[in-house]
Amino acid sequence: MKNLYTEEFRKVMKVNFETTSMSSNRIEEIMNFARGIHFERIGIAHCITFSNEAQILKQYFSQYFDVYTIDCKYGRIAQRDIIGGIGGRILCNPAGQADFLNKKNTDLNISMGLCVGHDMIFSKMSNALVTNLFDKDFTNNNDPAAAIAHIQKIKYHENY
Image 1 (cartoon, one colour):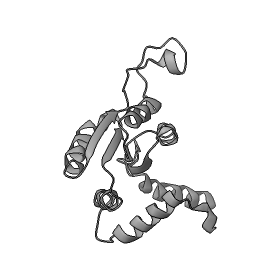
Image 2 (cartoon, rainbow, N blue to C red):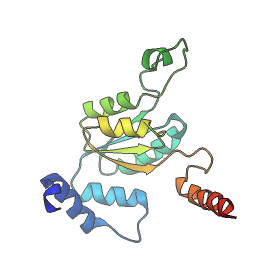
Image 3 (cartoon, rainbow, N blue to C red):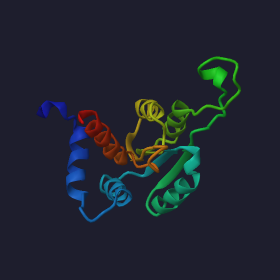
């Protein structure tokens, strides 16, 4: 198993071990990690509905880092240009978000509220490491963990 870890991965594991605290929230953990590994530039790729939260986060991280934010409608790409059809609806552009942050040479990118699938494209296209701050969940106030109770409830009713 040891051979699965590149030097970069070993460094990530070491810094995580040294900076993780049970008394820190997720945002503080990201801050501690990024400072511990000596990152300089952080990117925030966010759903447009979380623009306010992205600005708050940018302000918080700007104490120590150069921070770049990019919303999902970057480039204003029409539906017909990405997935075809005749619709002019503006689609999300996770590949464009990654490209924008790649050009900023970010060291760490934060995925914030991107849709399922879009988060995958963003992570795959990002040159920097990616961490999720939170995931979009329309029915559970952006708390996907809450769906576990729903699944358990369904399973319980199927058995009785």
